[in-house]
Structures are given as structure tokens and as C-alpha cells.
Image 1 (spheres, rainbow, N blue to C red):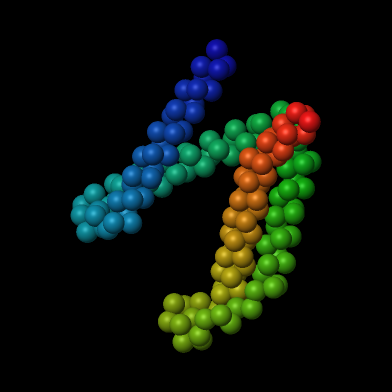
Image 2 (image 1 turned 180 degrees about the vertical axis):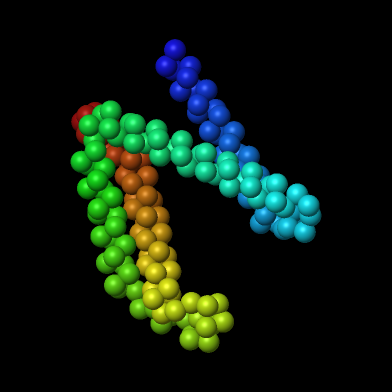
Length: 148
């Protein structure tokens, strides 16, 4: 019974995700911005995104608490926050001209925050790439060692 419920919830969440992506694509293409459907699509997009985020958080915390991994999770969150703070302190904030900052209504601290977020994304992509390569290479090297 639990497996059927999990599969049903997974399918529902995938459907909501696809629907949310379609609405986001419509906004990106500006196909609904001038029409009367803008309000409807906008509020549907916000509602679907809210339901999706609430479901993700609920099942994530349910899984963490039921398995007793709450301490590991909090350590990971603290490490991520500390990394963002360090990256914020490292970023200069002067990568963009002051005229461009004023044109877009940003300050130097806002520019530093954007720079820190960019560095965080770069770091996450690099770590994910290394992890993917490592998980693909490690089993092959272990098989070679066992055959010898």
C-alpha cells in the first residue's frame, strides 16, 4: 500500500512540475503577458510552485527525522551557509561599473551577493561533475583490482 501511495505522489509531483515548467515557459516567451490570461496563469504558477515546494519540504523533513539524520542535515546546512558567507566576503562587488549598478537599482553589497551566488553555482557544478566522474570511474577500477 505504501509503495502505491509513494508512486502516486511521485507521479502527481512530476505532473505538477511539468505544469509549472509549461507556465514558466509561457512567461519566458511573453505569450501571456499582454492577454487576459496573465492573472490566471500567474496565480496558477504561484499556487503550483507553492504546493510543490511545500510537498518537497514535508517529505524531506519527514525522511530526515524518521531516519535520525537530523544532525547530519543541520551540519550540512550550516556548512552551506558558512560557505556562502565566505564566498560573499571573497567577492569584490566591483566587477560591474557603478553606472550599470545605478541603472539597475543595485548597490555594491547587492553586487557582492550576486557574485557570491555565482561562485556558489560554479562550485556546485564543479563538485557535482567530479562526483559524477568519480562514481563512474570507481566501480571500474574496483573490478580491475578484483580480477587481478
